[in-house]
Length: 369
Image (cartoon, rainbow, N blue to C red; front, side, top):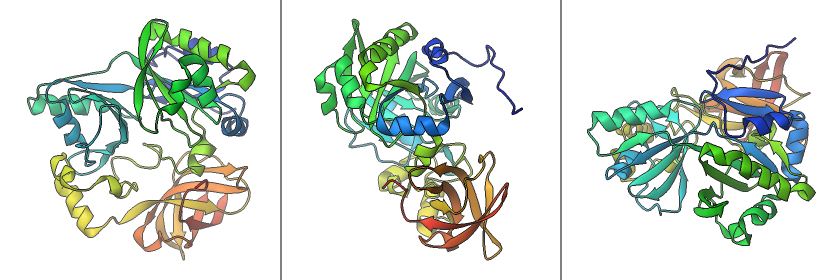
């Protein structure tokens, strides 16, 4: 019998927990001290449904760090080497957040409301304390706190139709990584064209725990004929699309250059961020390793619960950090951190899985691009 997760009060409920349970969730992981669903019907069945229909995801674990006050923009720019100077008040940016060594602390989405108010929509780490520490240590004129905001993702090919039925046809004109306010039951919520899949969709930033179930119920009532289902980030689909998972594919031991985010480390913004000296050195010398997409040959690989060693002609060459069998591509899709001498597309490598050595090859691009 496989291990199971003991749920207690130390794991925070979300505004949608009761609806998720009623929808037949079969597995969770723990993410930012909250429950994140990982399976409903099965990983493969959920994958096929996501790529053909529409799903509603409880991603409340994607907590917000709100930064509010006159020094808000200055503090946000200190966190990241990505240049935020031209960011509009209705934009979202994917940003690497680094420490003083240039190591990745998180890869969140920054949501700008105004120069004086930002949300950092975080991946799995206690980033709140880092941001509060910087603010207090630098005597900055800001408040840093976690607001009562719980994202709900609408993902899949029919996400436009479902959102139009609940929030009006104008929602479909929202551009990628832009956000706007929508009205629902007398409340105003931020909706962004974003989400942790490559199928297209939206994220509703539900402010107020009490508003969670009414929005969930409205979406399911409006989408019955679209075969709307509860879903979650899907392992197979995210690896196919090359979407990285902080804590799995990169950690504080890796820099943005190693995580494939060098394009976000340009210009004066690098000098303004907390890890500027380390990042400038790496920009000059280049990274020693880098995230790559990998095709692993043979039958379906087992679950990648720990990193798998990668070798080239018997010598260490990196590691695979995420892997899964892809029904659509009829191969094992994978993501790994590969040493510089072996990361060129077409390089043939060996991956040492729990059930034996596999032949593999470095890919130029994620599988669905």
